Image 1 (cartoon, rainbow, N blue to C red):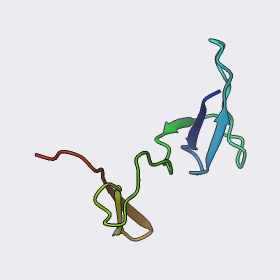
Image 2: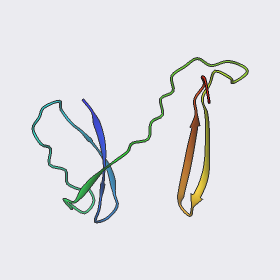
Image 3: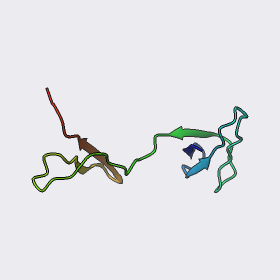
Image 4: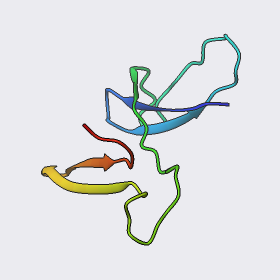
Length: 83
């Protein structure tokens, strides 16, 4: 069963919605303000595939920095061939 994240365009609250695999539409309502104008957002993932090594060459590297007040940007460098 997929889990999707939605943001309320009225109050900005983000919530997760667990859906069944059916084709029936799901009514999404904000938990905070009961608004019905919701947009689907890209979820963050915390799963990393691959093996680890003591040298760090086979492990992904995650770098986070502040992009603007209250926001952060994250870069993930995956192991493997690069151009």
